[in-house]
Image (cartoon, rainbow, N blue to C red):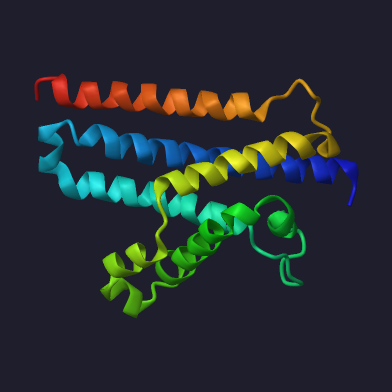
Amino acid sequence: MTAQKNENDFDNFIGNLKFAYQQFCLSAKLDEKLKNIPLAQEQKLFWFTVGMTLRRGYHAEIAKIFEKQNSKFPDVLSIYYLIDIEFKEHEKTIISLKKLRDKLLMHHDVETLRQVDYFAKSLNLTPRDVQNLFIKLFEVIERIKLNYGFSDTVSFGYEFNKIEIQAEKDLENLLSKLYTTPH
């Protein structure tokens, strides 16, 4: 692989991770904010669909990041090989995300769909677990970024913090316009 290809692959990897984190932040903030807006209860189907779409997106993306490369897709950028070294404490979360992605999100396992609440509870996967995994990902990326041509002045932690702040502001703005503007 050429150095340019490595840099482009890493850029794509970071872009996908940022997008997944945007989905996570918006989902978490949405769940939090909608509880305090009685009028939002009238649009339960809409907000449920938006929330589920966001969750499906970030669950699938994080699970994909930890997939083992195989001969069918040799160019897939994965950090599977860092699980034992860097992510041992998050192994339960990673396994749960993969199960959720495989059974429910991607393959629509009929048995799981019939018992979705039970399945989700059995995984013991919390938003805090997912957030902690994202934080660990950011830490690892900070350490390996120099191998992909990023300077030491590029702070991914800072960029991800901006995403969290922007998600809060955007959602606050949207909800205030939706639920304070006369219709």
